[in-house]
Length: 72
Picture 1 (tube, one colour):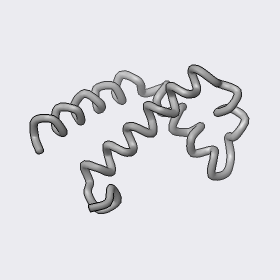
Picture 2 (cartoon, rainbow, N blue to C red):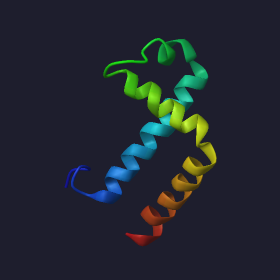
Picture 3 (cartoon, rainbow, N blue to C red):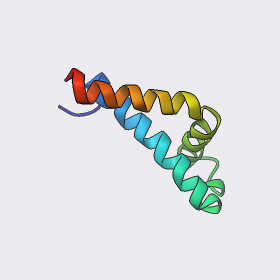
């Protein structure tokens, strides 16, 4: 089943995108910051969410890890 039809998989993909974009922005800020509009602007927005809401994103990642490991 694809990640679009399974809610838990969709949340996992979104959390991984947020964490990956925030990490890549910390390593290479010029690559993420030059594309703030359009399709590539969504990566900039995900990086901003990861930076500003980092305690909440981290908690969501830990909760998702426990549900993937022990719930399913």
